[in-house]
Length: 207
Image (cartoon, rainbow, N blue to C red; front, side, top):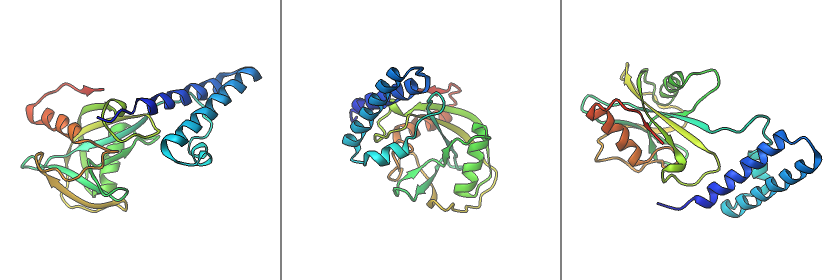
């Protein structure tokens, strides 16, 4: 597992600076937190190679207490227990269908919406299988702090219709998974939620 602890420290540094700027009530404190924020951008620049201006535009000043982003994913099984995956246009890897949680949609409503947009399938969420903290799993490094919710869903329709950002759709056996989009899902995570369904484990995996 690649050690991303330094990146995590930089992200924490930036979060502290953002929170400080949000609540600072005098110019001295604001100056110190601005300095910390600039330091965090310099470190992110060295780690990622991205221009500092681009980084500052990607992460504008926060207007509320910063919190984790939420990603939703669906485990959908065929009659012979194969796993539905979508091929992502962004990196050519495969992933469980899903995407970012949206304001105005509950987590289950979000996964219904995402599955329809990506696969054309109507689905019904049955239960929450896992809440993954991406920091605790060997995903490629990224600047965001993300919680990942994985729901077991049953398909109410069978006809596929690819979304604009999906290259392909298919069912795969657990022991014959294609190359995955590891920013979105890991083989170990798919194995965790798959085994929960096969074994009838009702406990929600967390962290």
